[in-house]
Image (spheres, rainbow, N blue to C red):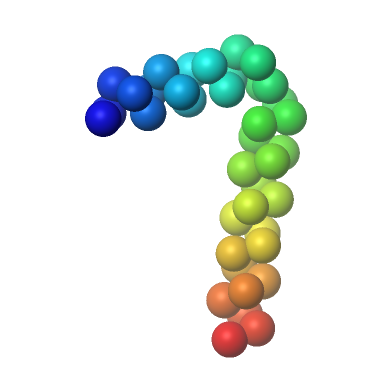
Length: 38
């Protein structure tokens, strides 16, 4: 399971690079907004 996640992470890093980081950042921001609304 860990190796699969690591492989997927490496694949996303190769394909997207900065875009993946921005996408991950947006997800974190959404979670924070949801937490703040509750």
